[in-house]
Amino acid sequence: MKNLILAIILLISTSLSAQVSSQSETSEQIKKVIQTLVDAWSEGDAESFASNFTENADFTVWFGMQLNGQKEIAFGHSIIFKEFYANTKWDLNINKIRFIGEDYALVHCSGSVLKKGTKNSDEPDAVPLLIF
Image (tube, rainbow, N blue to C red; front, side, top):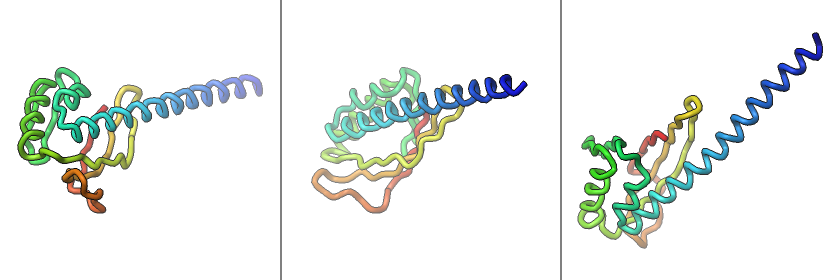
């Protein structure tokens, strides 16, 4: 009986450690994707920015406008990168990654859009929530 309990405990701990390892690897992948978004913004590259989203992604802009799909996200950002947010960078920080089951993660961020050459803001202008 003692061996059975020990075997069950070992199986549970192995399963949990594999999940933690997987979440750690996934967290690193999420960080890379967010860095790609930040870099694409800084370069004003709407296609690269949108390439991080799925074909059927939903993107809600800070004022509530919704963009549906990768093509709309690219088109919308091509306009803002040329006009409203030309020569800007996105100072975006990950505050928390919360895994919901095996397939989804909520990524709580904070940040600001700043003119290139200015120092990063102490207070964020936005607190985006990304779903991976």
